[in-house]
Length: 201
Image 1 (cartoon, rainbow, N blue to C red):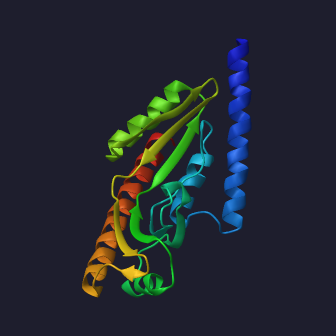
Image 2 (image 1 turned 180 degrees about the horizontal axis):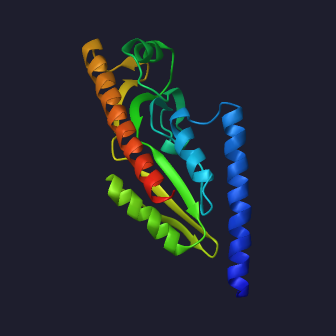
């Protein structure tokens, strides 16, 4: 075995062990996204793959301070499940500065492996599941990282400078739309997990 391959194997073993331990701690402390636990545990239990930071999708209200860049944005509310009109309206009625945006963000999943061959296996699974957005984002000896993203998503402003910009009926429609997209997002994630279990068993 060449020196580079030996270094690569050692790197992969160390990185996989680190992420497996991190996942186990997150699950034990109930910090892991519940809808990601099944898939993450399955991948972590394989010999050739690991998962890192991942999210099953969420609905959020993002606060953007007046005159600030997106880097200054913060979470005003966050749900890893469907949200209700009452929850969103309550959040909008609280005293805030700048803008509040209702957003539905799709799942994002990172799977790591040791070789380019295995990274290509992961990308093939992605295609079979119908996931259209993804690719290799890290490529070096002993560590390849593949990122997957769902395509469901929405983003719209609902409040600016203390004034709610939309009627209750519009806000209800927006929440229903976000919840519908979140449901479609979860369906795609379930298909992806099913394909992973067939391909990596």
